[in-house]
Length: 428
Image (tube, rainbow, N blue to C red):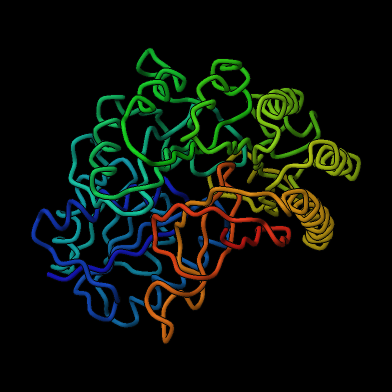
């Protein structure tokens, strides 16, 4: 039976797709590259934003109109009513139940609706090992209860994977050619709280693995990061760890932060960033901001602008507030759409200027870059190895280069240009 697997959302979702793909192949299914060639389509979905949910629902409706058999896996499975309105025969697989994906595909092929909710461990399951990038889940769920977050409803329980399994996944992936290991989770900072250990201990274990590879750590909430200082930064002295820190602050207003029920303070965020930059001046700091939270006043928004100007993050993921079903924030009166859009536009302009300013400081510098992605024109009339490529410097800055290269190559470049999102390098 032929199965097409389509993935939306975060790196953790992509890691779950690697596991589902491995299970399906192990069970004798054939993975195909186009939905038109598939007997069953599996959509591994995301629910973090309303716009993403709407796009996935439209996708389900279109596939249903084509009479495709559909499995809806991932976080959108919690919105069962809306999924079934789009496709009554869909089979739902909740995030904790990916081990049942083969049974779900079989049920969908028979044209029977179903709902797989039972949580089961993912350790030891078959998986697809990809190169040059390998996604390794270290945990899912969190210990927070943010009022705007629907993902917490989809992945409600903290579940950390054992260091033994994480290490074995990385070792096998490195043997199969992985050059960048993405350690991913819903909140990497919560790792181990259910196992009597912590993230620092895990990183100390995995950095003992031999091999020429780099590791990128996923999102850490500032409150967790603060508690792990300075030991966390001691671990990051390892040259194989990208000097990249994703620390979502969500707002510059302490008042709004409290009204979001975030388990950290804005001051915590600033303290962590200051400590990182003192140790690693060129570190890449990424954060998230929600604009237009229902309780956000113009004064509160001004504090967010002030925070961005003060901290100057390298990357800021700006999201307009959208209420999500089942959350406390959905019960609040929303700010008019036009005002949210105005604030979002103003903030987006500011962070683009900050990003461009930060990247200009790298012009003229020499950097070691790991090639991880083909750019436009990376193949074609000039041969399979000649064209445009994208890679990552030691601080995870994206560097675009041209010329001969292969995925997984490490190249030395001099930065000859930049914009707000990328550096442009010339091989030396």
